Length: 90
View 1 (cartoon, rainbow, N blue to C red):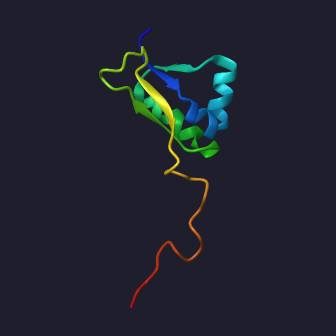
View 2 (cartoon, helix red, strand yellow):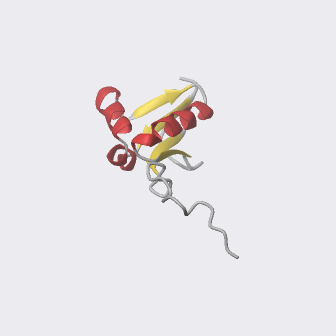
View 3 (tube, one colour):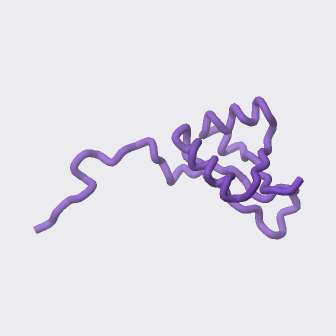
């Protein structure tokens, strides 16, 4: 099938409720029309736990084009504490 197929890795399932529900209902992969659609989905569901799409390596033996993986360094659920966004130093 043409498109961009993403395997949902265990790290993404553990961190992101939406990814876990997808796997439980529809299986461990999802096919998108193109890579941009896969990345948009990852961005959309990141409010449930930060995830991102990573391209499969050229020598990857799997049949997928990319992976949905946990991205714990990109935590968007924690806002910056008040007063720390723009500190002025004299």
